[in-house]
Amino acid sequence: IKVTLHDTDFFWDDIIEIFAPKRDWYLPNLCEKREFEFAEQLYDGSAKIKMVVDFGEVQNPCGVEEDALLSGLNDAATALENVQLGLLEYARGTEVGQKYRHLQRQRQATTQRRRLIFSLLATGFRVMAGAVSTGGRSFIKLFTRQTRVGNALSTTADMATIGSILLGSPNSYNNNNNEALLEKVFDRFDQIDNQLDNIQAQIKDGFEEIKLAIEEEFAEQKLDEWITFRLGVKLREEYLGYTDRSHTGSSRVSHEETFRQTCNGDHSPYNIFQVLYSYSCLDCQRFSSGKARQYFLDTYVNLASANFETPVERVLWFRRSFGTVIIGALTEAIYFYSVCLYGTKDDGQCGVADPVWDTRLAEMGDALEEVVTSLGEAETRLE
Image (cartoon, rainbow, N blue to C red; front, side):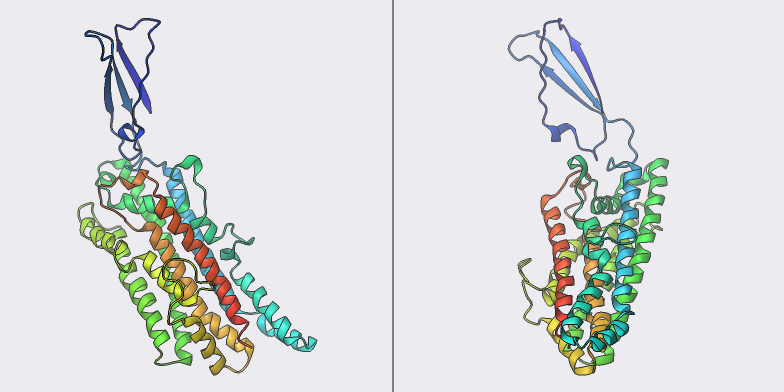
């Protein structure tokens, strides 16, 4: 920011004090040149001063450095990849048979089986539960618990939001520099979408596992409604329609409005998350919904016990079906919450932190950890 003072009739002993409300003259997404005049009010012909605030040339309408934006979007893709790998490891259960036979030989089946189950849970979800993992930080920490640098928008979730907003900004298409940046942003969103495709495929496989045990079941139908249709079809397709790189600045407008309405409607990512949490929570004290009347986690524990003979088979089916579906869907809901468009198009939301948005995002991260723990507790009943 460059500030220039032009004075008239000032002497060496004059004192100049200027008080200007910060929001009136400084918003990172309003990068135009501004001029302000100040004058002594008591005497005619007294000194006057003019202040010019010039933000200079910026790289994008949100005023975010290109490296920070692209790095944040790269982190988002990596975080989603970690979830995908965690789900693969969680559902594979390659150690179950060997460890289970070892436990049988030790004749300590009940106690040891519980240790086995929780050990595997921690292994399978280490990238989400916060333990040390190959590839770095956990999804929950990266997306919901990063601390902003200097209180400026700087977290992975912030960059996902800003990247999404930039796609719909008319100013993003008004010069070569911005268009070049948009191409890089689109490349990052393509990487993110590839990881979302992989997680969606795992969710689909989870539903196929469910159908191995049940054909017509209310618990399966409700999960299908919320996860396959409301999250996987409606929300995701509207997101893809908005972020499609083949749009022009004008053709994106109608898709942007459709996406914005869903983000703020009854079936927003935040609301979908709360419903899925209520089906699978442990303490069920988060959000206003609490524990659902139809608590589907118990249903799937009972289905596993009724349809499979050994504890190993029950645990593996439970993980590959209900566990994979729930964790995959909750992860997607957190991501979509971060890229959703809130408020109106003219709110200037690029440069303003929203404490309600922050609080909800952090609560979603805590809730996801609680669900992971809840799935582990449920496995102790599959004996």
